[in-house]
Length: 164
Image (tube, rainbow, N blue to C red; front, side, top):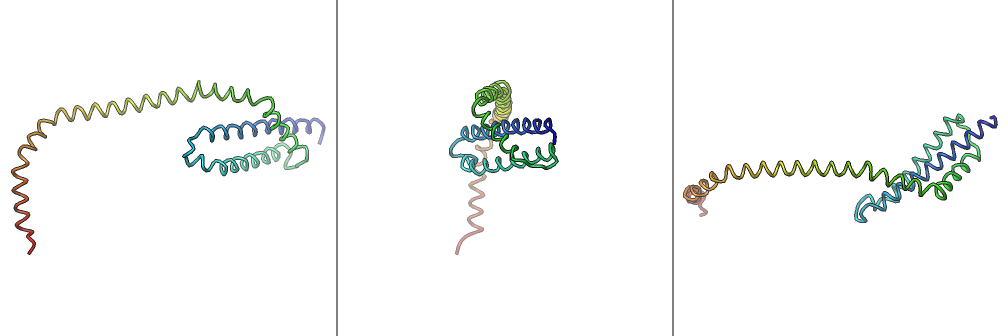
């Protein structure tokens, strides 16, 4: 393995360590933002371990792609270096990017979704109101004529199903 290839693999593993730090930080922020009573919050430790395992598999896949599966001691050390770089220098920048992403993309989607839900609820409420206004006179007539027939039906039912 040439020096260029070694340097290239160290740079790639350092960048993957930075990405691992960002993903773990994002999952921790996500789980801390969820309600404490939520099932996801209760399972957050287990899910974080699953995320760590997936990141490990992805790291070994990167090693497989770059070096054909050759593993050297410099690979995990460069990933640890990437995680430390993220924690030391890049965390505020990534969190700022996350906030910008939430403000520019996620919040407008949520607002549009809520607007659509309100429009659907309002339309359904309007249709129910129109239905109520149109059929209210018929309902009053039904109640007015129901009582004599209903009491007659109850009397017939009592005579047929008498208990002896």
